[in-house]
Image 1 (tube, one colour):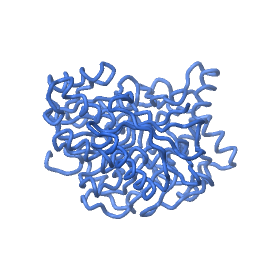
Image 2 (cartoon, helix red, strand yellow; image 1 turned 30 degrees about the vertical axis):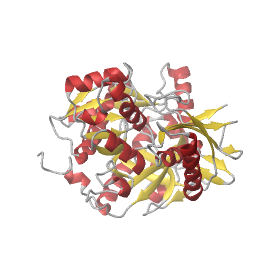
Image 3 (cartoon, helix red, strand yellow; image 1 turned 180 degrees about the vertical axis):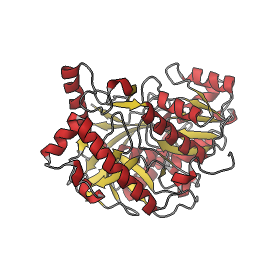
Length: 451
C-alpha cells in the first residue's frame, strides 16, 4: 500500500471522458437535490425560469445564476432572522444530519459557513488524503499543523484529513505563539509542517533567536504552504527550502469544502500550479471577471473561478463565484501526476490598477522576494485610499537585508525598479526601513495598508 503513488488510483487515474461522465451524472442529481431541499436555490431557479430537468449538459448548467459571497452572507442573515440559525435557507440536509459547521477566517466581514454531514466530512477527509499521499506522506509520519485552529477550514478539517490517511497530526496551531510551535517540533519530531509561507519565513528568521539554532536543523522534510499566496512562487519556495535544510515545498489549498489541489515536486523554477485532485466532487468553471460569461477551460486559460459541489449533502454550493482568479493548465505535467493544474493568481477584489496596469499584491510580494537576502521579504503596500485605482507611483514600504549600507541600498533599488518595470510593468516608489521594523504576521500576511 505504501508504495503506490496515488491514494485513490481508481478515481485519480480516470480519463477525461470518464471524469466528465461522472461529473455530469452527479451534477444532474445534485441540481435536483438542491432545488428540492433549499429555498435559496429554488428561488434562483425560479427567477431564471428553469427547472432541474432543463439541465442535461454542462452548457445547460450555465443558465443557473451565479452565487456570490455577498448573497451567501445575506442568506445567513435572513436565516438568522427567520429560523434562528444561519443556514436555514442554504442547507439542504435536515438539521439532525448536520454534524459540523466550518467557517472561513472571516477577515473581511461576517464569516461564511460550511455545513457538513458525515457524508460530506468523508469527502473532505478523502481529499486531504489524496493531497498528502501525492506529496509522499505515509501512515506513521508526524505532521505539525501550525495554522489557526478552531472552526476555521484549515483547522479541524485538516486535522481529521491527516488522521484519515493514517498519518499523525500535531495540531499545535499558532494561537500559543512561535515559541510554542518550536517547542512542539522539539517534543514530537515532525517530518512535515503546515503553515503560511510568511510564518515559515518568520520561523527561519526567529529560530536562531528563540531556540539558538537554525531552522535547517529542525528535521522538517516537507513544508506545506497554506492560507495565503507565496507557495507557488519560485523565490519563496527556494527561500523556504533553503531555510528548512532542503525541505520539499508544496503549495496546496482546500479546507472544509470540496475544492482541493496540491502542487507537485517539480523544481522551484519549473513549478506551474497545483494539481486539481477533487474533480469528482467539485465541478470547476471559469468566467470572465467583468462580463461573467463562461471561459473555456483549456491549456493557458485564465478567469474567475466558479465551483459547484458534487455528491454533497449539507450546504452544497452551486455556481459559487468566490472572486479568485485562476490560470489553468491541461497538458500533462512533467512530474507524471494526473489531472489538470491551476494557479490562484489573486482575488478580483484585491487587484490594483496603476496607469491601466492590473497587478495583484501577491505578485508584488513575489517580485520583492526575488531579491532575498538583500531584502527580508517583509513589506506593506501603502495606499492613500482604497483600491483598485491607484494614483502612481505605487508606494511599497519594505525592509532591506542585514548589513546593507546606503550605497548598496541605492544599487538594490535601481535593480528592483528595473525588475518591476520589466516583469510587472509598474514603476513603484520604495520606502526603505530597517530589518525587523515591519510587524510579522503569524496568520494571513497583511500586504496592503490604507492610510
